[in-house]
Amino acid sequence: MSMKCFLFHVVPRFFMQVNSSPYENGWIIKVEMSDNGELNNLMDSEKYSKFCEEEESKH
Image 1: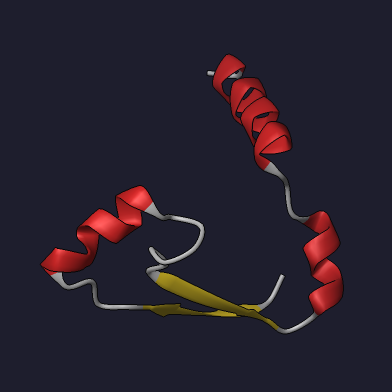
Image 2: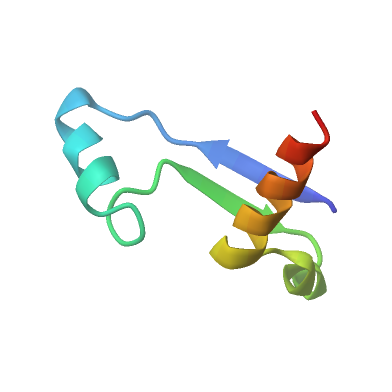
């Protein structure tokens, strides 16, 4: 997977937006995919939780 990531500087007064609106106004990174077809390989929250549980059980 190839992508560009941009990290935004978060001013202290905007930390509340990160916590209160993480999916709308609280973004702190921007990701640009080189191949939008790779989006099909991303996990939703349910798949990611299952993945984390499986990884945790290995240790």
